[in-house]
Amino acid sequence: MPETLPPDSVGIVSPQTLHFDEPITLACGRTLPHYDLVVETYGSLNADASNAILICHALSGHHHAAGYHSLDDRKPGWWDSCIGPGKPIDTNRFFVVSLNNLGGCNGSTGPSSTDPATGQPYGPDFPVITVKDWVQSQALLADRLGIGCWAAVVGGSLGGMQALQWSLTYPDRLRHAVVIASTPRLTAQNIAFNEVARKAITSDPCFHGGRYYDVNAIPRAGLMLARMVGHITYLSDASMGEKFGRELRDQAYKFGYDAEFQVESYLRYQGERFSESFDANTYLLMTRALDYFDPAYEFDNDLSKALAGATCEYLVLSFSTDWRFTPARSEELVNAMIAARKRVSYAEIDAPWGHDAFLIPTPRYTEVFRTYLDRVAREVGA
Image 1 (cartoon, one colour):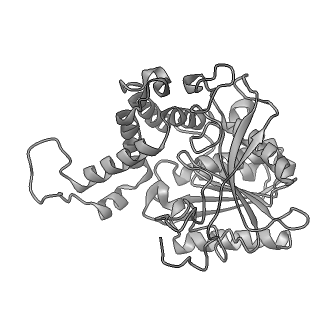
Image 2 (image 1 turned 180 degrees about the vertical axis):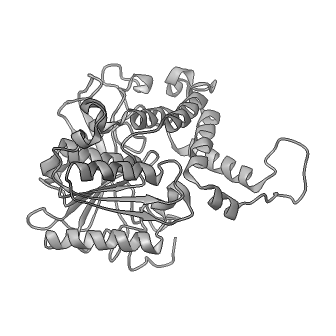
Image 3 (image 1 turned 90 degrees about the vertical axis):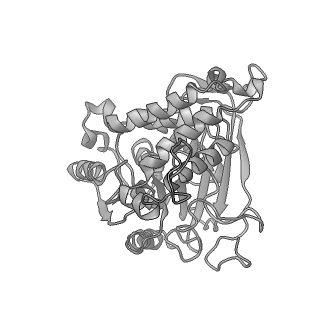
């Protein structure tokens, strides 16, 4: 934590828990009788509620997107580089809403929450969630906040899928959708990576069929492996090579199987840290939501037909070394938007950091992002 707050920080922020008593019916056919959503907001809502931006998080994200929870925090929210005064998502102009999605493990109702039918944690009985379900709950959140139409819905990776789904499900409730480092559907390879991660978790002896809460256990080894697999796919070969190369921890071979290379040590550290903070059942839910997302599925696999009813403008951004959601996937989406005669701006950003590049403020990325949102702000008089 810096000794003084940076001038472009939103400062000290506090999450809010919003309770919804109305039942919500999900795509799987099941209903949650009531639920909580944890949110953070930054900036001020203008008189006609036209300057609101929704931030949709990725797989391991949450509501804490910007600022600090206390002066003791070692680092700010996960997208602080893009949210704040004078930043691309300028909180001097926009009212920004960030939430932890249903099924999450950072305060919103999810597998670790109490099932009112049993008085015990939902565990594996928590319903499978889809991107459509998240968007539905986010629309109800907008109603609660008095926001009839978002100036923009913005997200990277899985968050970008939510921004895209918003434009399809509620076309009259957003002016712009910003889809960053995302895809209109997973490739078979991506589904395979998710399955390996899920198998690592469910094979952990401490998983107990998803009821590890009941025995005060955590499937740490499985979560650690899942995160290690995922983290490899978020980085590029070049970025891993630049950061670690083939560096040895002790400058000599040990002729064993402990972590001898720096990259091994880094992955183990990331996995161990993740296993201490993220819920295994939530990880299963989030990866399955990724797998299921495919707007074209209900339209004879024709993405342009799926986009026919959308009325917003789009900004689509991809990154040159992102091999998880390659630029080709973004171009597929952009081509379908053009075929559907939608207004779309597209840029491929040259960046060496792979999929994680959407979290790193490279100059061209920041410039394109800021320029587009400047226009959004002018449209709503912000």
